[in-house]
Every structure is written in structure tokens, then in C-alpha cells.
Image (cartoon, helix red, strand yellow):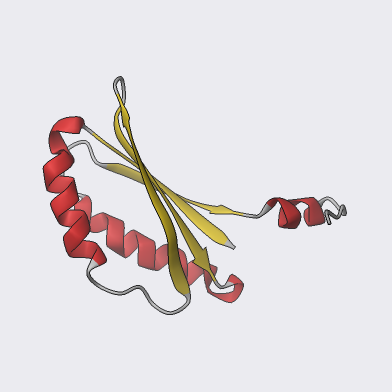
Length: 103
């Protein structure tokens, strides 16, 4: 399973968010949670947007969400910082829910 996080923050907070990101990510994630990608974008009307994709062992989804929440609450003091965590399936897994297969 994958956990995808979306972070939004005002452009004028970029430096403080970047500094906090470096600090927070210096700590290794637990072995059941793997950061696959971090992608950033500047949105003129909405500020900065960062998507992160994490792979988590199926049996540890709850623990993965808790670990990511612990990480992101460290940004709470930054005005305008918002985040959400979404569990996501692969297309193959989602089709399986519908009783369909993809090869």
C-alpha cells in the first residue's frame, strides 16, 4: 500500500519549511515505511505544494499513518502550513477490488 501526503504552504514560508524539512527528515523512517519520492511545485494562486509518496507494509498501515502524522505535526508552528495523508492503492489493487485483473 502507498501513503501519499500533500503539503501546502505560503511561498513566504519556503525557507522555514525547507529548514524544518531538512531537520525532520534527518531522522530515519521505521523499516516498514519507505519514502519513494518527494515532488514540489509552485502554485501562483495557492502557494507551494509538495507531494510525497511512501510505501508501507500492508500490515503496518496504521503505524505508517501515525509515523507520518508525528513527522508533519512538527510543522504546525508554521503559519499556513497544511497537510493531508491519503492511503492509495495501485491500479492493479483497485481493479482487484472490482473483481477485475490487469496483466
